[in-house]
Length: 217
Image (cartoon, rainbow, N blue to C red; front, top):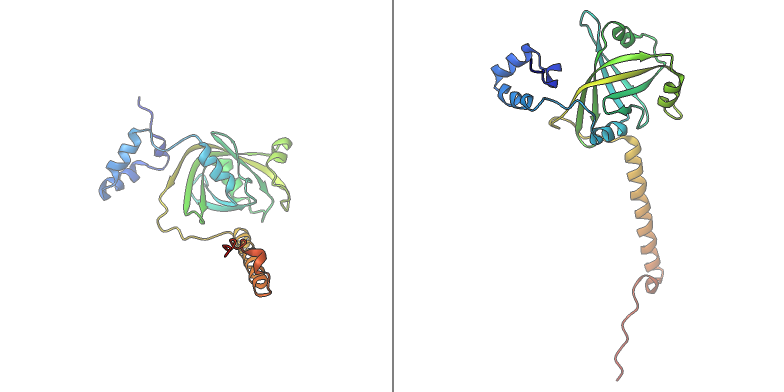
């Protein structure tokens, strides 16, 4: 029996039927013959994940009711443990525990990561488990200086991932990155203004190269 392509995690028979009706099935079928989406986290995607400050985590109840949760932290808070595993420290929040309830009866999840500055998005499918009795793992995953406490770790075994086109992604920048760029600009402006002031104040000879010697008569 032929192994199903990894993209079948999203391309159900109903999805494929609509693709066929809308004219995109042939191109996706060619992708499926090559195995579908990637199932291992490459160095490139691992670097992308390590740079993210937030992501969205989708889960569903046993009845199929979906839920999306936002998670944020410093770069690296979503940790790549190996080529097939992600994990993060689940900090205390509003105590609704919807995601935890969903995972207790349905481990399937999807992560949605957005890099607005570079207009790139990555979708990751997997199965998640809740780890509460591993202090060493929690200590490793806890972001340095993060407020609050970690109630548990969420460990995700990656099933497949896909990075698709940047169409319709608005370009936005992190406030911290904008501040650094502004500080560099202001420092350069101050440097140039100091040079101009020195020129106006008679310090031109210190900034310009020495004049060539004049020929003797």
